[in-house]
Length: 463
Ligand code: LLP
Image (cartoon, rainbow, N blue to C red; front, side, top):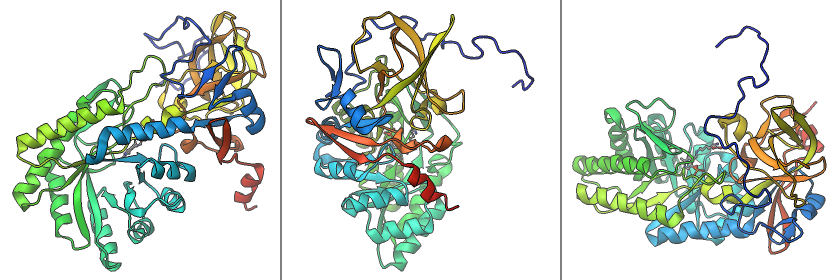
């Protein structure tokens, strides 16, 4: 990479990606149900509402920026996943996508289990009354204190991620006079991304224990030998925002091969396999995610087929969707602060949030859409970039989108599909105050995570 200074061209490393749409959508006022939560609608006057409440009213009451979460949609998605997998399988919501006590209560009411990956997530889950046996504990470097708390609380399973952890959890359980149910997370040599999957021979990443080289088999041997552990199965998670089931197919096949090896070597048929999360959602109208019932059918067919050919009874399957449940249920509402046309390029629309409430665009080059939601407009479309108010040119929320050319300061715009990995990855960069999460349902809105205040900032800063 060249580090010498040079005059930047107008589109300095910053042109529209090849193949990116250059034509605006037919109607800028339409809200594609693929990317907006279920109860979002635009009325005849042009105002948008969610859960029966107009966004302008929400902005007035709760301020901007703010995340508005469609409770009915969240619950419906939980039920769709639970019903799709039925009683033969377990659905664990991945709390890292977004977790709060209200979410934990809804999960319980809708019959889902919960994955946590830190002491903070465990505390939140237990504080909201999730029974410990319905919690799975993940992570590649759980501290001694975290292991102790998880074992003591009686979590349903700990997913073991390294040889050291096998010993640590066994030791802790024995010391506490318990036998901890565990799974071993294996790396199957498959890394799946959107629209593609790459089978890799090497395992150059931090999670899990490699199937390659007999390492996972050795981990199983050790776990079976330790009194403090009850090994209930094998766990695999192959990536994020996946649309193609081929990666799961390879992963399931390799996990089932390991189960067959375990049976042959130890005479034990492990009763469960967990295929992780990673199912994709629609961030833009170009994305076509599968429905939970299609995913459930595909996964159970793959596992059943592989087990039949290995002569194994089909194990109980579990899955861990995070994004696919909460992602589509929320949008971020911003107020437009400035509108700056750059001649021949695009118009920069600055909003009152930014990379502190949505780091995904800066971090992953994630794509989002945006709509004017406080009114209807029949003005011409203009190519925009929605940017935040942080001191950084990479502070981009929506890289390329179209908004009506009469957009003006004070208008409300909303970015859909921000339910997952936005509030949970939010930061205080530039001492921004992290926005609230407001649940909306049947004409009622309720704060479930309040907005940070300057007092919160000063409380942490002990002077
Ligand atoms: N299970 C395990 C073991 C995981 O590591 C993850 C996500 C999930 C389940 C849930 O995956 P989901 O269904 O939500 O894709 N910050 C990134 C995503 C990181 C995912 C980490 N692990 C993003 O914003 O795209």
